[in-house]
Image 1 (cartoon, helix red, strand yellow):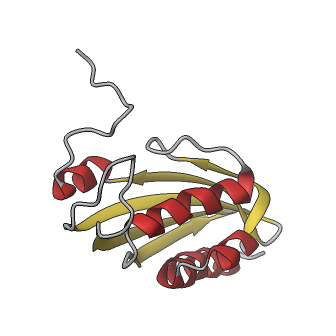
Image 2 (cartoon, rainbow, N blue to C red):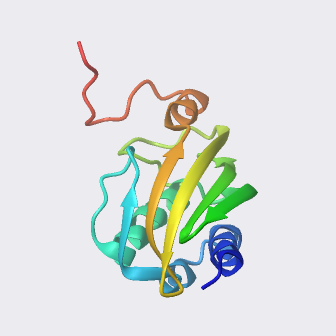
Length: 146
């Protein structure tokens, strides 16, 4: 695929999948052995692991919107800057009840495209900003260093 086709694939992934919360569409755009590198999420399980993580997030934040702010690409890599916003009004996340608070955070994803699918991603996002906006002091199960 060309660089422009790679950018279009990744943009479609973020704009369409995250707008509609369509897990099946998302899985169809990922390689079966998809790998996600995200310091906030222990990840395994390929495209089905992606499905499990995003199902949990979308249950916690049912009105989540993700907006692509810009993209840069070279070779098989596409860097996407995005903003995510929503309300913590669903099932809660990280084993705690929902707060009812709104949030808006920014993130950057670097997606590697192979054979017309997103094969691997490195994701950095404002996890501390999310926690601060929701009034969460720490994520249960993650120890605070002494």
